[in-house]
Length: 217
Image (cartoon, rainbow, N blue to C red; front, top):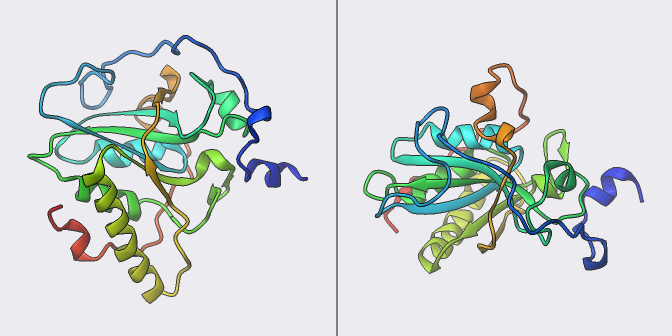
């Protein structure tokens, strides 16, 4: 099996890297928003976790939104506890690169976050985004509760119709219940703010979400 082929396949349990018991050392504040990137967060805020390819650009897409309190780059969806970036890149953790979004629902709705999610990447590419190939770059929504699950599934159906009308393919996005979120290393946090000329291959299809995606949940 070729390198790219193996990276497109989720690892078998006996191939998963064991990881470690301790968290990677990460701390705030957010370099753009000035807020803490780790809990505890102020009362009344909600959380969302999205994977849409390279987390550098994905995090920036969300920190620009009014009503977002903080964001953080991390790993989720796999089996290796507290993985390193190098371990995730090996394809042997099962984790995707993801963004934690902490938001004020009185200022921005979860459905509005979903609009940014769908429009900021190509959800039809399977285990890659552009030239970034591997399971870590898969498209995924990790829902926190039934309200988020229903909103994510409904928005997927609506965006799929829009993609078909534009002559594009089928959505491969996974929508699943949230598991542990592991913070990525400090240098990954707000990477494109710290590195103005940094590269990230995340890019949308050019197809806008239907207005219904923005409807109240």
